[in-house]
Amino acid sequence: MKGAFELMPVVLVVDDGAANRELIRMYLSTIDCEVRLAADGVTALEMIENDPPDLVLLDVRMPRMDGYEVCRRIKAMPRGRLLPVVMITGLSQTAHRVAALEAGADDFMAKPVEGAELIARVRSALRLKELYNTLDGAEHVIFSLATAVEAKDSFTERHTQRVGESARLLGQRLGLPETTLDTLYRGGIIHDIGKIGVSDSILHKPGPLDAIEVPQMQAHVAIGESIVRPLHSTLGLLPIIRHHHEHFDGGGYPDGLRAREIPRMARIVSVCDAFDALVNDRPYRTRRSTEEALAVLRAGAGTQWDPETVDLLVSELPTIQHLGAA
Ligand SMILES: [Fe+2]
Image 1 (cartoon, rainbow, N blue to C red):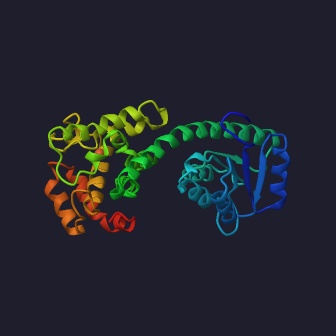
Image 2: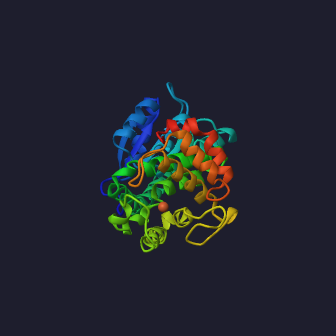
Image 3: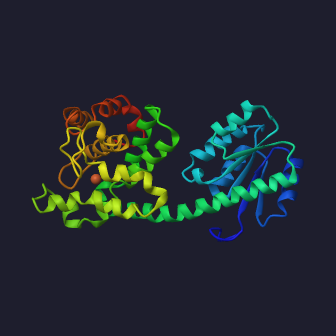
Protein backbone atom coordinates (compact mmCIF):
# COMPACT_ATOMS: atom_id res chain seq x y z
CA MET A 1 0.00 0.00 0.00
CA LYS A 2 1.34 3.42 -0.95
CA GLY A 3 -0.20 6.88 -1.24
CA ALA A 4 -1.74 8.33 1.90
CA PHE A 5 -0.11 5.73 4.16
CA GLU A 6 3.20 7.10 5.34
CA LEU A 7 4.04 3.80 6.99
CA MET A 8 2.71 0.30 6.51
CA PRO A 9 -1.05 0.25 7.23
CA VAL A 10 -2.02 -1.24 10.58
CA VAL A 11 -4.84 -3.78 10.93
CA LEU A 12 -6.22 -4.44 14.41
CA VAL A 13 -7.81 -7.88 14.83
CA VAL A 14 -10.21 -8.11 17.79
CA ASP A 15 -11.36 -11.62 18.68
CA ASP A 16 -11.58 -13.50 21.99
CA GLY A 17 -10.55 -16.76 20.30
CA ALA A 18 -6.78 -17.17 20.02
CA ALA A 19 -7.16 -19.63 17.12
CA ASN A 20 -9.30 -17.14 15.17
CA ARG A 21 -6.81 -14.34 15.75
CA GLU A 22 -3.94 -16.46 14.52
CA LEU A 23 -5.89 -17.67 11.49
CA ILE A 24 -6.64 -14.10 10.44
CA ARG A 25 -3.05 -13.09 11.08
CA MET A 26 -1.93 -15.89 8.79
CA TYR A 27 -4.30 -14.81 6.00
CA LEU A 28 -3.14 -11.22 6.32
CA SER A 29 0.50 -12.22 5.92
CA THR A 30 -0.04 -11.95 2.15
CA ILE A 31 -0.92 -8.24 2.51
CA ASP A 32 1.69 -5.61 3.15
CA CYS A 33 0.40 -4.54 6.57
CA GLU A 34 1.18 -4.66 10.28
CA VAL A 35 -1.21 -6.87 12.25
CA ARG A 36 -2.05 -6.13 15.90
CA LEU A 37 -4.15 -8.43 18.06
CA ALA A 38 -6.60 -7.77 20.89
CA ALA A 39 -8.46 -10.45 22.84
CA ASP A 40 -11.40 -8.27 23.90
CA GLY A 41 -13.16 -5.02 23.11
CA VAL A 42 -11.99 -3.02 26.11
CA THR A 43 -8.35 -3.73 25.28
CA ALA A 44 -9.03 -2.92 21.62
CA LEU A 45 -10.51 0.50 22.51
CA GLU A 46 -7.45 1.30 24.61
CA MET A 47 -5.15 0.31 21.77
CA ILE A 48 -7.15 2.45 19.30
CA GLU A 49 -7.05 5.41 21.67
CA ASN A 50 -3.27 5.14 22.14
CA ASP A 51 -2.24 4.49 18.56
CA PRO A 52 -5.07 4.31 16.00
CA PRO A 53 -4.84 1.55 13.39
CA ASP A 54 -6.04 1.92 9.77
CA LEU A 55 -8.62 -0.86 9.92
CA VAL A 56 -10.39 -2.87 12.64
CA LEU A 57 -11.56 -6.44 12.10
CA LEU A 58 -14.04 -6.97 14.89
CA ASP A 59 -15.61 -10.13 16.27
CA VAL A 60 -19.19 -9.77 17.53
CA ARG A 61 -19.47 -12.21 20.43
CA MET A 62 -16.87 -11.36 23.04
CA PRO A 63 -16.76 -11.19 26.83
CA ARG A 64 -16.69 -7.81 28.66
CA MET A 65 -18.14 -5.86 25.71
CA ASP A 66 -19.73 -7.17 22.52
CA GLY A 67 -18.57 -6.13 19.06
CA TYR A 68 -21.57 -3.89 18.38
CA GLU A 69 -20.82 -1.78 21.44
CA VAL A 70 -17.11 -1.66 20.58
CA CYS A 71 -18.03 -0.49 17.09
CA ARG A 72 -20.36 2.21 18.42
CA ARG A 73 -17.63 3.48 20.72
CA ILE A 74 -15.05 3.52 17.93
CA LYS A 75 -17.42 5.53 15.73
CA ALA A 76 -18.08 7.98 18.58
CA MET A 77 -14.35 8.78 18.89
CA PRO A 78 -13.29 12.04 17.22
CA ARG A 79 -11.34 10.21 14.54
CA GLY A 80 -13.43 7.02 14.57
CA ARG A 81 -15.57 8.25 11.70
CA LEU A 82 -12.48 7.84 9.52
CA LEU A 83 -11.51 4.42 10.84
CA PRO A 84 -13.11 1.56 8.86
CA VAL A 85 -14.56 -1.28 10.93
CA VAL A 86 -15.32 -4.68 9.42
CA MET A 87 -17.42 -6.85 11.72
CA ILE A 88 -16.88 -10.58 11.59
CA THR A 89 -20.02 -12.30 12.71
CA GLY A 90 -20.61 -15.97 13.34
CA LEU A 91 -24.28 -15.12 13.11
CA SER A 92 -25.45 -14.93 9.55
CA GLN A 93 -29.05 -13.84 10.10
CA THR A 94 -30.09 -10.56 8.54
CA ALA A 95 -30.89 -9.10 11.96
CA HIS A 96 -27.27 -9.36 13.01
CA ARG A 97 -26.05 -7.79 9.81
CA VAL A 98 -28.48 -4.94 10.29
CA ALA A 99 -27.27 -4.55 13.87
CA ALA A 100 -23.68 -4.35 12.61
CA LEU A 101 -24.59 -1.61 10.14
CA GLU A 102 -26.60 0.24 12.77
CA ALA A 103 -23.58 0.15 15.06
CA GLY A 104 -21.74 2.01 12.30
CA ALA A 105 -19.75 -0.88 10.80
CA ASP A 106 -18.44 -0.17 7.32
CA ASP A 107 -18.63 -3.81 6.24
CA PHE A 108 -19.18 -7.26 7.66
CA MET A 109 -18.36 -10.83 6.82
CA ALA A 110 -19.49 -14.21 8.11
CA LYS A 111 -17.55 -16.80 10.03
CA PRO A 112 -15.85 -19.06 9.23
CA VAL A 113 -13.63 -16.55 7.51
CA GLU A 114 -12.46 -17.60 4.08
CA GLY A 115 -8.94 -16.47 3.18
CA ALA A 116 -9.50 -15.01 -0.28
CA GLU A 117 -12.61 -13.12 0.82
CA LEU A 118 -10.88 -11.71 3.87
CA ILE A 119 -7.94 -10.49 1.80
CA ALA A 120 -10.26 -8.85 -0.74
CA ARG A 121 -12.29 -7.12 2.01
CA VAL A 122 -9.19 -5.93 3.81
CA ARG A 123 -7.63 -4.56 0.61
CA SER A 124 -10.87 -2.74 -0.20
CA ALA A 125 -11.21 -1.33 3.34
CA LEU A 126 -7.60 -0.12 3.31
CA ARG A 127 -8.21 1.66 0.01
CA LEU A 128 -11.15 3.40 1.68
CA LYS A 129 -8.94 4.39 4.59
CA GLU A 130 -6.34 5.71 2.17
CA LEU A 131 -9.02 7.98 0.72
CA TYR A 132 -10.10 9.01 4.23
CA ASN A 133 -6.50 9.88 5.02
CA THR A 134 -6.39 12.25 2.05
CA LEU A 135 -9.63 13.96 3.05
CA ASP A 136 -8.53 14.05 6.62
CA GLY A 137 -5.27 15.74 5.61
CA ALA A 138 -7.11 18.49 3.73
CA GLU A 139 -9.68 18.93 6.45
CA HIS A 140 -6.92 19.00 9.00
CA VAL A 141 -5.61 22.24 7.50
CA ILE A 142 -9.07 23.80 7.66
CA PHE A 143 -9.61 22.80 11.27
CA SER A 144 -6.15 24.06 12.18
CA LEU A 145 -7.14 27.41 10.69
CA ALA A 146 -10.30 27.39 12.80
CA THR A 147 -8.13 26.87 15.87
CA ALA A 148 -5.94 29.75 14.74
CA VAL A 149 -9.04 31.96 14.64
CA GLU A 150 -9.79 31.03 18.25
CA ALA A 151 -6.21 31.84 19.18
CA LYS A 152 -6.60 35.33 17.64
CA ASP A 153 -9.26 36.05 20.22
CA SER A 154 -8.48 34.80 23.71
CA PHE A 155 -12.03 35.65 24.79
CA THR A 156 -13.43 32.78 22.75
CA GLU A 157 -11.38 29.89 24.03
CA ARG A 158 -13.18 26.64 23.20
CA HIS A 159 -16.18 28.69 22.05
CA THR A 160 -16.47 27.02 18.66
CA GLN A 161 -16.00 23.57 20.17
CA ARG A 162 -18.94 24.21 22.49
CA VAL A 163 -21.03 25.59 19.62
CA GLY A 164 -20.29 22.41 17.63
CA GLU A 165 -21.21 20.16 20.53
CA SER A 166 -24.43 21.97 21.38
CA ALA A 167 -25.50 22.22 17.69
CA ARG A 168 -24.95 18.49 17.37
CA LEU A 169 -27.03 17.86 20.48
CA LEU A 170 -29.96 19.95 19.21
CA GLY A 171 -29.77 18.14 15.86
CA GLN A 172 -29.89 14.84 17.71
CA ARG A 173 -33.01 15.92 19.62
CA LEU A 174 -34.61 16.87 16.28
CA GLY A 175 -33.94 13.34 15.03
CA LEU A 176 -31.66 14.49 12.21
CA PRO A 177 -29.54 11.81 10.50
CA GLU A 178 -26.03 11.04 11.66
CA THR A 179 -24.40 12.70 8.63
CA THR A 180 -26.26 15.94 9.41
CA LEU A 181 -25.20 15.74 13.06
CA ASP A 182 -21.64 15.40 11.91
CA THR A 183 -22.04 18.45 9.66
CA LEU A 184 -23.55 20.42 12.54
CA TYR A 185 -20.62 19.52 14.77
CA ARG A 186 -17.97 20.38 12.20
CA GLY A 187 -19.91 23.45 11.03
CA GLY A 188 -20.20 24.67 14.62
CA ILE A 189 -16.45 24.49 14.99
CA ILE A 190 -15.62 26.04 11.66
CA HIS A 191 -18.42 28.60 11.12
CA ASP A 192 -16.32 31.67 11.98
CA ILE A 193 -13.20 30.56 10.12
CA GLY A 194 -13.46 33.67 7.91
CA LYS A 195 -12.50 35.82 10.91
CA ILE A 196 -8.94 34.87 10.03
CA GLY A 197 -9.33 37.60 7.38
CA VAL A 198 -10.69 40.27 9.75
CA SER A 199 -8.22 42.60 11.42
CA ASP A 200 -7.49 42.15 15.12
CA SER A 201 -8.38 45.79 15.82
CA ILE A 202 -11.95 45.05 14.70
CA LEU A 203 -12.20 41.65 16.39
CA HIS A 204 -10.91 43.06 19.68
CA LYS A 205 -12.63 46.45 19.62
CA PRO A 206 -14.06 47.07 23.09
CA GLY A 207 -17.18 48.81 21.81
CA PRO A 208 -19.61 49.02 18.90
CA LEU A 209 -18.17 48.90 15.38
CA ASP A 210 -18.43 52.01 13.16
CA ALA A 211 -19.93 52.21 9.67
CA ILE A 212 -16.64 51.26 8.01
CA GLU A 213 -15.87 48.41 10.39
CA VAL A 214 -19.28 46.72 10.24
CA PRO A 215 -18.96 45.53 6.61
CA GLN A 216 -15.38 44.43 7.30
CA MET A 217 -16.62 42.26 10.15
CA GLN A 218 -19.54 40.98 8.10
CA ALA A 219 -17.16 39.95 5.34
CA HIS A 220 -16.06 37.02 7.50
CA VAL A 221 -18.89 34.84 6.18
CA ALA A 222 -17.79 35.30 2.55
CA ILE A 223 -14.12 34.93 3.47
CA GLY A 224 -14.94 31.70 5.28
CA GLU A 225 -16.86 30.44 2.31
CA SER A 226 -13.94 31.10 -0.03
CA ILE A 227 -11.53 29.28 2.29
CA VAL A 228 -13.67 26.16 2.54
CA ARG A 229 -15.22 26.00 -0.94
CA PRO A 230 -12.24 24.34 -2.70
CA LEU A 231 -12.41 21.36 -0.35
CA HIS A 232 -14.78 18.65 -1.45
CA SER A 233 -15.02 17.06 2.00
CA THR A 234 -16.24 20.26 3.63
CA LEU A 235 -18.75 21.38 0.98
CA GLY A 236 -21.63 20.43 3.30
CA LEU A 237 -20.45 23.08 5.76
CA LEU A 238 -20.91 25.99 3.35
CA PRO A 239 -24.57 26.77 4.22
CA ILE A 240 -23.57 27.10 7.89
CA ILE A 241 -20.56 29.27 7.15
CA ARG A 242 -22.42 31.59 4.77
CA HIS A 243 -25.75 31.89 6.54
CA HIS A 244 -25.10 31.81 10.29
CA HIS A 245 -25.76 35.58 10.54
CA GLU A 246 -29.06 35.59 8.66
CA HIS A 247 -31.98 36.77 10.82
CA PHE A 248 -35.33 35.02 11.04
CA ASP A 249 -37.13 38.22 9.97
CA GLY A 250 -34.85 38.73 6.96
CA GLY A 251 -32.79 41.48 8.56
CA GLY A 252 -29.48 39.59 8.69
CA TYR A 253 -26.62 39.12 6.25
CA PRO A 254 -25.25 38.33 3.71
CA ASP A 255 -28.40 37.43 1.71
CA GLY A 256 -31.30 38.70 3.85
CA LEU A 257 -32.88 35.23 3.91
CA ARG A 258 -35.89 34.83 6.18
CA ALA A 259 -37.48 32.04 8.23
CA ARG A 260 -37.18 28.65 6.53
CA GLU A 261 -35.24 30.10 3.61
CA ILE A 262 -32.33 30.06 6.03
CA PRO A 263 -30.74 26.60 5.97
CA ARG A 264 -31.84 24.70 9.05
CA MET A 265 -28.29 23.89 10.09
CA ALA A 266 -27.39 27.58 9.97
CA ARG A 267 -30.42 28.42 12.16
CA ILE A 268 -29.28 25.85 14.73
CA VAL A 269 -25.65 26.98 14.79
CA SER A 270 -26.76 30.61 15.01
CA VAL A 271 -28.74 30.03 18.23
CA CYS A 272 -25.98 27.91 19.81
CA ASP A 273 -23.39 30.51 18.83
CA ALA A 274 -25.42 33.34 20.34
CA PHE A 275 -26.08 31.52 23.61
CA ASP A 276 -22.45 30.57 24.13
CA ALA A 277 -21.30 34.09 23.24
CA LEU A 278 -23.75 35.60 25.73
CA VAL A 279 -22.68 33.48 28.69
CA ASN A 280 -18.97 34.13 28.07
CA ASP A 281 -16.92 37.32 28.23
CA ARG A 282 -16.50 39.32 25.03
CA PRO A 283 -14.15 42.24 24.28
CA TYR A 284 -17.09 44.63 24.45
CA ARG A 285 -18.91 43.25 27.52
CA THR A 286 -18.66 40.80 30.40
CA ARG A 287 -20.60 37.56 30.52
CA ARG A 288 -24.33 37.41 31.20
CA SER A 289 -25.99 35.02 33.60
CA THR A 290 -27.84 32.06 32.11
CA GLU A 291 -31.18 33.70 32.92
CA GLU A 292 -30.14 36.95 31.22
CA ALA A 293 -28.88 35.07 28.17
CA LEU A 294 -32.16 33.17 27.86
CA ALA A 295 -34.08 36.42 28.17
CA VAL A 296 -32.05 37.85 25.27
CA LEU A 297 -32.69 34.77 23.15
CA ARG A 298 -36.42 34.76 23.92
CA ALA A 299 -36.68 38.46 23.12
CA GLY A 300 -34.98 37.84 19.76
CA ALA A 301 -36.93 34.69 18.89
CA GLY A 302 -38.85 35.30 15.67
CA THR A 303 -36.81 38.37 14.77
CA GLN A 304 -33.15 37.39 14.98
CA TRP A 305 -33.46 33.69 15.77
CA ASP A 306 -35.61 30.73 14.81
CA PRO A 307 -38.17 30.49 17.66
CA GLU A 308 -38.38 26.69 17.51
CA THR A 309 -34.62 26.37 17.87
CA VAL A 310 -34.63 28.83 20.79
CA ASP A 311 -37.34 26.74 22.50
CA LEU A 312 -35.33 23.59 21.88
CA LEU A 313 -32.17 25.11 23.33
CA VAL A 314 -34.10 26.21 26.42
CA SER A 315 -35.47 22.69 26.94
CA GLU A 316 -32.02 21.16 26.47
CA LEU A 317 -30.24 23.70 28.63
CA PRO A 318 -29.15 21.35 31.43
CA THR A 319 -27.41 19.08 28.92
CA ILE A 320 -25.85 22.00 27.05
CA GLN A 321 -24.50 23.40 30.28
CA HIS A 322 -23.15 19.95 31.05
CA LEU A 323 -21.22 20.16 27.77
CA GLY A 324 -19.49 23.17 29.26
CA ALA A 325 -21.46 25.65 27.20
CA ALA A 326 -22.09 27.90 30.15
FE1 LIG B 1 -19.85 34.67 12.67
